Length: 69
Image 1 (cartoon, rainbow, N blue to C red):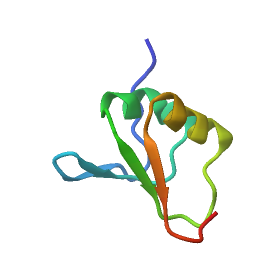
Image 2: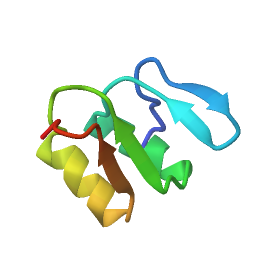
Image 3: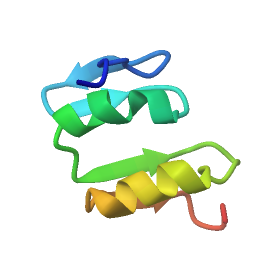
């Protein structure tokens, strides 16, 4: 069983709304438990291929700020 490692700066904003720092592959098992439908990325950096693939495989919509990438 994979360890459940929350991302850096993870926190609950309100029920069903979470915040964190950039996702890493070590966080995937933890993130999967949240049953997310959308992830909003505010960073100017593109998500890594691993993160993008994880989101796609888990049918989690990736939302970015307009003009980000």
